[in-house]
Image (cartoon, rainbow, N blue to C red):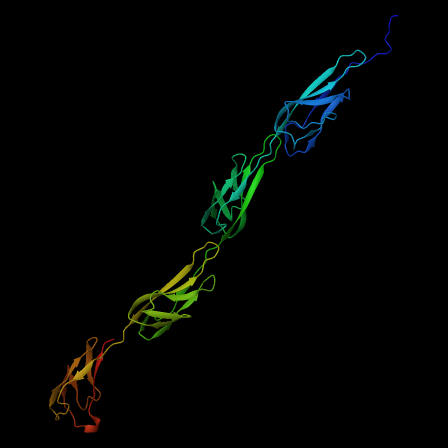
Length: 323
């Protein structure tokens, strides 16, 4: 008995394509575009691609990054030959920006701090979110103006992956302003006082003296303690990495003069007579003078009787030392 064909069968034919390839490893599950005969099976070479054998869907997250050849195979029926077609798919590892570190995170305008990157998958680029607050070159951060911004390190994405960025904040503080000290006189005697005032300061500060043996100060009231010249200071503390700011104004303190002691005899003379007085222990050259020139004038210590005076109101002499 001779057999005869019972029907006509079309040879299998199909195409497959992963149109979005390359895919990032973070793309999730991606589908294949298939045309033609359905019902085939999918496989991949080399190993490492997480592919659904029935649908051709690929899980990018569980696949090993690399390039694969996917085969779609259809078994022929009714005497038709088996059919295979292939397509390539590439899975790319997502970039890792890593972690930024570095202290201090608070700096002064004009000050610097150094940040470092670690754990990055590739060399990236440094950046700042606000150049008016801080700039960065190879991790060296410089304060530009007061405020807070983020320093960034970005690793570019390839093969369908987005770039990855690590950030670390930095706070920039304006430096303090001590202001200007004013006040007169700037020359006082030991035990004397003068008042200094502060203006233009950015915050409340503290008064001080560079030498308390010469002058002390309390709330701007300067008191002479000993002869010499020193500076009165007003200091506003620095914050956020800024140094303190100090305003200064000098003060000169002078020791009071010492007239010394007048000696000499006799202390009683006749009208027209003379006696000589001497000065000792004086701090500087002074001037001679009587309390009453009509009774007894004096020239360089030589006292001359001019008019009588009662003993109970004897003329007194003073040596006035120049200050």
